[in-house]
Image 1: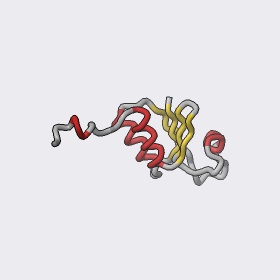
Image 2: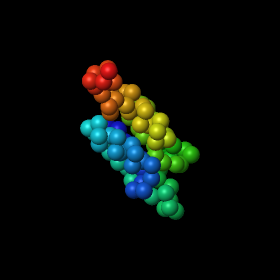
Image 3: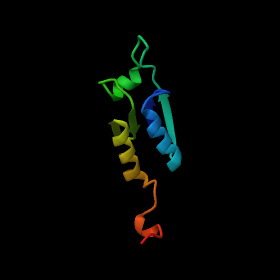
Length: 88
């Protein structure tokens, strides 16, 4: 299962939105970036300690747009192929 590390008002919402639209199963790991105690799970994934971060099996990524491009490349595009869309 894909795990997304993020917050309620962070760019991780882009990643969550895309996974919802694609129907992908995921787990959202909420991270309180203002907490005095760093989140150990996020530190293990991203020692730079910023969100969003994502784990998909052996793949770990950061940066919301890069994560979204990875998801669309691996699990299929969100939009139909232009040749099959009836356009001409």
